[in-house]
Image 1 (cartoon, rainbow, N blue to C red):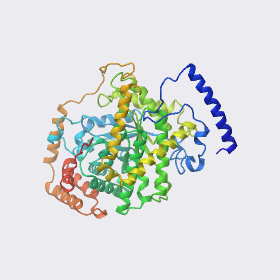
Image 2 (cartoon, rainbow, N blue to C red):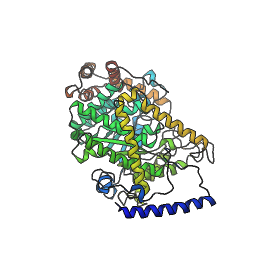
Image 3 (cartoon, rainbow, N blue to C red):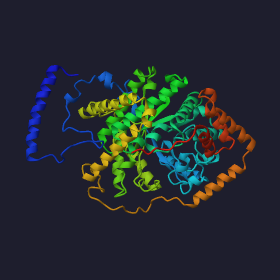
Amino acid sequence: MFSEAELDRMEKEYQEWLQEYRKALQKMPERLERFSSVSDMEVKALYTPLDIKDKDYSQELGFPGQYPFTRGVQPTMYRARLWTMRMFAGLGTAEDTNKRFHYLIEHGETGLSTAFDFPTLMGYDTESPLARGECGKCGVAIDTIDDMQRLFAGINLEEVTTSMTINPPASVIWAMYIANAENEGFDRKKLGGTIQNDCLKEFIAQKTLMLPPEPSLRLVVDTVEFGTYEVPRWNTISISGYHIREAGATAVQELAFTIYDGITYVEECIKRGLKVDDFAGRLSFFWNSHIDFFEEIAKMRAARRLWARLMKDRFKAQKPRSMMCRFHTQTAGCSLTAQEPYNNIIRTTTEALAAILGGTQSLHTNSLDEVYMIPSEEAVRIALRTQQILADETGVANVIDPLAGSYFVEALTDKMEEEAMVYIRKLDELGGMVAAIEKDYPQMEIADAAYHFQQQVEKGEKIIIGVNKFPSARPDLEFVLRIDDELENFQIERTRQFKAKRDKVKLQKAMDELRRRCEGPPCWENNVMPALIDAVRAGATEQECCDLYREVFGTYSDPGTF
């Protein structure tokens, strides 16, 4: 990139500047003893061409839409089409969430994103004793295909893309979505969207656990296989770093562990007999956009390059789409504070801007009251307007990858990739992600990072405005949403009425076929998805399908190692 003579001249000039800088510090010392990112990655005072002197533009940057995709997965990026504005929504009953969906669409949302309540996330119907007190509290309660119909009533499922944040019961919820769409007259081959369906990050971080790792992976591969042949527009996994970061991981840990989860899914699909170029183009990722602006941009750029290289070199992918790291981004929930909650608007705006400059394909912006409860309409509208203002008023979407060539951004991108590769080699040495999880390796790495960050906050080395600097009390917000406890009784009664009307012979036949497939060896003939679609159409509830899974495959509880 530069001649030896030019580099020598720059080095000399840099050393001269460094002397001047040190003299200036004698008059006015630096305001911190040490400067580092939110992940505690040390940051120098100045970056120059010397920090990227060995960079090969064509091999490491290239052009948007071309390998290694550092500068974006599409040639045109936001100049042709803005990112999908996909606001996370789920509350109360299916009708309550349907109302919120229509509200968001009316205010300019371009993609749906569904949050489910905790019983649904764990594979239990609302009437289960294990579900008491949780109905509709952290998302929508979905027990039956009728609930799914109410959830998407009045929405054209061939025109809108739908993301569903569901993991252990992902196959069941997706079966309900497909069966309901077909009941409404839509073609499954025209359905677009994403199921999160990332079992590995549950063992690492989020802990909505149901089955042991091996059968969990088997069900994930079933959905990938079925989607490849039957629902070709669907992203059957959203490989999620978001929850890994929310658990306390550094940016590098989020990047490395998430990418390695992706490696594991690719390996498992290949073992099933799928060809990498037939399914890899429908894998997607989900990143956390945290508060450290440049660190997050570098992480996303490094993710694209790292994934492209792994897919090309490790898995011999041929199609460019198979090498693309396409991703959704959500601003960091763990960065929000209950103290001075209106500050969260500023945090979210900064994190959203980082996601956009990092090249995200879709984006959720957290609401100012999300640290209190499910977002209210007023707060969610502000969060959506944040994206719209960034898109249409600021000019940041007018140039593709505008920070490319920044000495700091490029050096940080390189460092992210290098340090992530250290973790990836370590995971290889441990025998893969499942073996590493069984040894508690990623869990303990994240726990150590979270503890280190908390120590820095308590010592004042990391600043959180309103918390450890300019501390403030938690105020009461007038518009915080609250869920009526009577909702639970209503949902229980509705599910019981649904079950009473079922054709028991038809239901038993469908459940027997689902059991047969679960008990058989993993293969296309035993793929659970066709049987699940028939079962939920015959009236099987989410818990009945998940209970069958638990009977056949066993259950898993987190060992809680510390």
